[in-house]
View 1 (cartoon, rainbow, N blue to C red):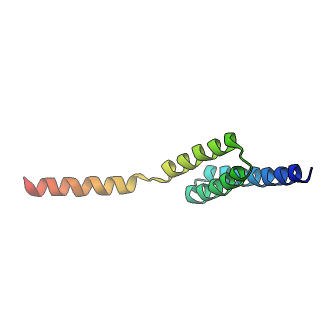
View 2 (view 1 turned 90 degrees about the vertical axis):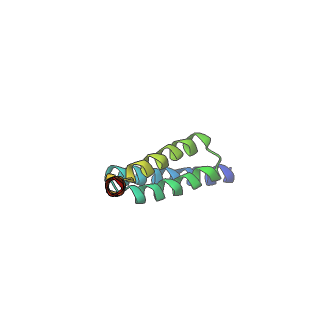
Length: 88
């Protein structure tokens, strides 16, 4: 009975972290959201909730992808074009 109560507590903590992470994601705070999803994942991992672990992994990936801005891509493109133009 005590073990089940501990599992329930850990699940609730994981759910709270997951909810907070989604709010951060919606607020476009992707790095902070990723960190919270990772914390939630650790909670779910400790109680071996594979479904929630998978869900956290998906949101971690989404946070990483959303955090990639177009600015570094544009800078790289400009550099490549500049180098290409100098060679010709």
